[in-house]
Image (cartoon, rainbow, N blue to C red; front, side, top):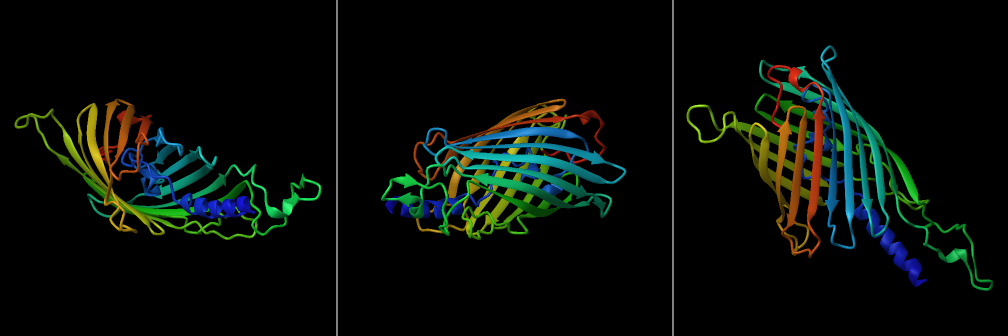
Length: 329
């Protein structure tokens, strides 16, 4: 009975925790991780991967991966994309896999501004390691036999699948962007119990960025065509929220900067406003772009080893991208 109660409580708590979406620190490198309106944003074909290793020194290790392929059709003024998200957690053997397809359309609203509405549809699958979970009606005390079947209303499935719908929009010119997105518009049921109903909370995001040229060939000590990039990303899912604010310098082949992750709407007296400082740097060379970031926790959570994140992007037709296309990420 104690084990039954423990697993029931644990199931409820873990369902709440893993109803939250994975968040990548380098959202500015692959912005379609937060907004499908960035699909085909560079008006070229590109592929890329991201890997995030969270708390490698703790017993609760979380690894997240993201892979994508985007392409652009100038005749249709549309971007098409497909992406794969995978997340694994070591303590409960939690696993999430989701495949999405996305579509974005470009509308020219003036000589300098563009509008990109977008839609994303996908299928996700979550699973836990429930192999050792035994419910009360499976035990036969007289014979000591454990029945594999259960009619308990809290009987759980190892896996749950769901369809997911999201949408986004984006306004941009050559120097700045502002956009928003909503995931899980259909609030899919992600409950592991057979008779349960646990809607996945909608994920709301508002993101923006501004690029400022800080040098020219005559007056600055910085290399020619150096740029300063400011980014921000506010996210809300159920009662959880996060605001990332970052700044970085972009040179011809190198970029470096830092992002502050904050919790503006603290839900308890012990919550920290500043949760981590995340420095990043990367290299650019023709078709390739490589990035690395480290999340240094500031909330005193313990010796977790921080969070390491790597990104690799390849742009096939980099030299043929259109004149005036945005290039600030």
